[in-house]
Length: 407
Image 1 (cartoon, one colour):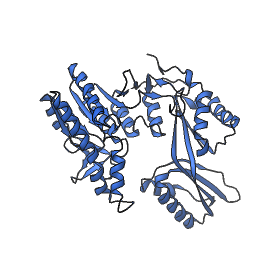
Image 2 (spheres, rainbow, N blue to C red):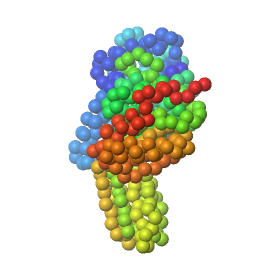
Image 3 (spheres, rainbow, N blue to C red):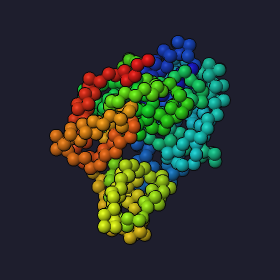
Image 4 (cartoon, one colour):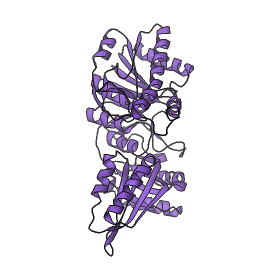
């Protein structure tokens, strides 16, 4: 059994749907049982989102999901009709019909359980099962959606539940690259990548695979391969070996960050309540950094996703007023860059190389943090592309061994 996922650009027109049908037919000809997960046609989710926001910038989450979920429903119906016109038995399933149950957090729900019986019955009857990605159903029977990139999560979760041989993610790029080729033309495709590295790249802005999809793949050891819909090739496979390489394997970035800086915090005050408030609001924050206390006060800064900036800033100001803090400032023109690779913390010259490279370009690093597998830094948004390009060259990723690990 194979699970294949096709993104929005892959089914972005009738001609592209026909091309996807050709790929499915070729896989079927090899005798494989096949579950196909599809996204909404390119641009359709954005169109639906704009309509949902016509009367209010914050539409009711339940009804918002009802609107957004219709994009994938169109895709699965069209693809099944195309396959049927070629004599291939195909049956469409919405998230609910496929037995995908989620929690109640509308617009970014998490999959809780999958009842595989409807899909297994269709496969045993000889159908290609075509499933709407990005969506499910809550325990109360409401339609839910999984957030941007949620079709990846649908595909990997189904592959895990069905114990598929492989989950193939078809997209408009032919694999995972050492950096975004749109910024670094000399970036190279990796033939394989470790689960740990893919997890960090996806969490730090690389858009090839949704973060939650990688988490599920790692937890259930699902073989995943990223492939191009539009060109033949081996793509990039994700493996679960953990050999230490002590080298940078890829660079990710995010343009969607803002920095909140708090100063004049009494030295005895813990910022744990501030953090817990952000977690309770399910607001995305990162790179928390506290300075040592001087003259009885200390400072704190952290990154927040720009979509959450206003509620987080309001909560931070409320907290500062409660504790007698002095100042809250916001910089919404920053970007985060993350270098990923196994065993980076044990390679002392990594951080030195980063700082020297950017200093030579006249670029200031606002903050930096490191772990065993990544180094993240914040720069002014104006210098994002220049920084990524310079770091890619400094670590010679254009000449990197695209096989990250040997047997």
